Length: 475
Ligand code: FES
Ligand SMILES: [Fe+2]
Image (cartoon, rainbow, N blue to C red; front, side, top):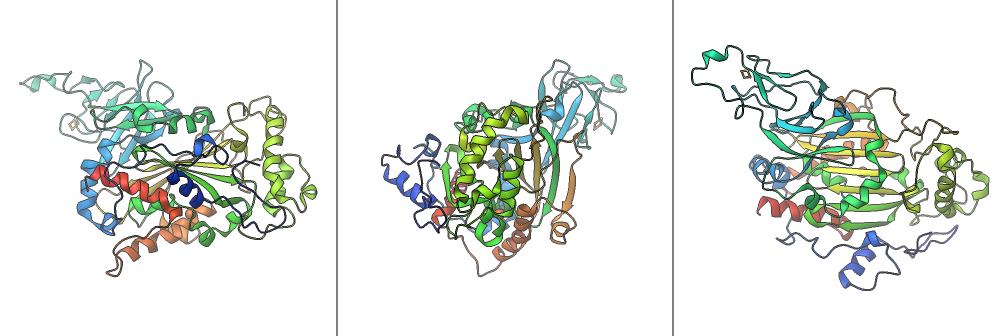
């Protein structure tokens, strides 16, 4: 058990180390070494330069603000465009559409992954409209201008009819800054913005040891939501709602003892104990049904855990570490708590990464091009393939039915919010519950009776995020 909190076996714990107490300690600047791991200290320059701001309803409703985001937020930040494994070979490409913009990501003959605006230099047609694939050259469907995989203009049909001449140098596709990190492709449309390194800051070392670049895409989904893109992102920036709309979490996680970190540039993190139960509620006398399955999958006997449910988390860490080579996984870079807990990082302005040892969720909010009350919520599940000589088939996910490692990269599935509400589609039970709620949040914010949000201490990540959003927007 970690040194930062106490839990009492078989009883309701009233002495939890809550997020609120963490924030109190941070603001007092006291000696944290006894109670916090290094990752739980918030850097002093994390606060937005423009200070704390009100989160008013117009941020979610105004078309004017949506347009302003196109000048102030989207072009000036580093955006997760897609997974690098989709462009692992020369000729592979994918298209990243965000609002009115479309970016073409290509693997060149020189072996580089690079990005361009998906706009033909002749008369502006979008060159690639399908999401992903392999091409010899990028050929504009309108008049056949042809660009190499590196974006260079190579063929202009009837070139001699351009009496003013064609300059292949300047008429090539317009490049966009690109960075490959953690198996993901990141782009930035502003040549003057800070480097990716500077932008992502210390979050880098929180994530890269999970080795996302070795994982494969197991599921790829997009839901079209009837809410502003920030409304859904806010939802994934707090755990205050979890006890209300995700009751199942009480049997697998301990949200009240979660720890929060706030980072420069608007990023935030939360760390949640897994393989445990909500210690604010009565601790069950025996492992929950889900826990029993988890224990069995690790060769552990659930009967041994009667009355000592709170020991499961630590024992799972030990067992998982001991069994790593038999399971075909390499946990050498992961700390003990990373073998049992959930680590979630919200990367400004629109992406979140949820980390587990062999499974990572990439979620992202994309705005609608013109309607502030619509957005796209993307979810990609990455899984780590076990080594080929694994002796045991692992079943270590916290969800009852883990995604198996697929033979082929699955196609993206896109559906509506109503499909999820009607039970026709699922993004997993937790996300489905969020999708149900989010429409009514947007509707409520439209009311003349709602003006601005009131946040509690456990929603500090939302406030932090919006403070940086305000700084970017210049408000
Ligand atoms: S717009 Fe692309 S070739 Fe004419
Ligand atoms: Fe939720």
